[in-house]
Amino acid sequence: MDWLGGTLVLAAVTCLVLGLQWGGNTKPWSSGPVIATLVLGPVLFLVTIAWERFLDEKAMVPRQIFAGGFKKAGSIVAIIAYAFATRFNLLLFSYYVSQARLLYDPAQLSGKLTWAPQSRAT
Image (cartoon, rainbow, N blue to C red):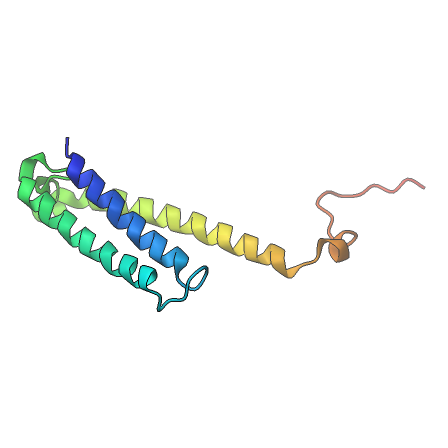
């Protein structure tokens, strides 16, 4: 098992996400911690790539998986593309639905929106 590689990936993603969350929300973009995490994240990604290349066959993701061009690694690339596309769609949908809720006042729309047909007894 590649414990150091896993730790490096975890640290890189944490730094990147933390810097993006801090920037503009709780701290200004020009603050030291934001810049440090946004610089440290990609540096840790590069260190991770170097470490994985050093381990070769014992790495978390062996290079042999991607060797041989697209014909041999086509299914791996397709799986990664599919995972990215489905996650991207989910994030897009959840973002716009939550933004649309903020535009409408439920008190004003309470009588205008009907989700099921109403029956009126006379």
